Image 1 (cartoon, helix red, strand yellow):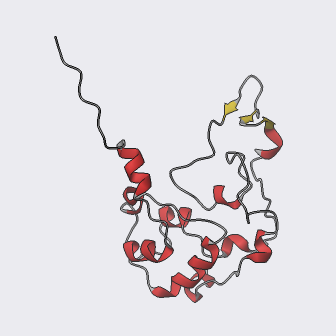
Image 2 (cartoon, helix red, strand yellow):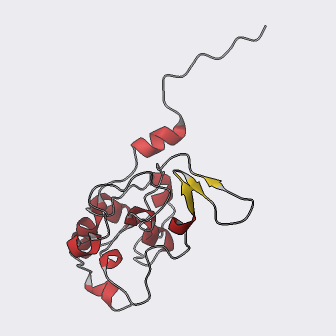
Image 3 (tube, one colour):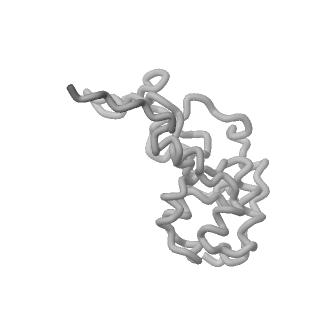
Length: 160
């Protein structure tokens, strides 16, 4: 007879990764090797767009590169708070496709079931509060979020 393995007292690896995720903009900036000029705008925007970056994800970012695409997915810098011509809160029409709590029906004969609003990575798009994957809109991320965001952006990011 083969004995059953003893149950582990440690949480699964994915839960440990979430427990150890980076949630402070200062720590993320240090990990990716960016200067302190990014800290003020990142902290201000993180009040509305909370940061959660698994360390394995951050390890894949290019050190010292403020334009790294992985970094840009997760580091809010206030640009998310600005009104831009042509910008719409729901560019792919997910909100109009809601067929009920946790159900999107965009295409005939297909449905997307959203079983949780939890996510391993808080990207700035989903954190904007318009994502249908969030079961509730977190406090402070309503449609007036832009008016409450400081919008401070480092000089080096303004030139783009």
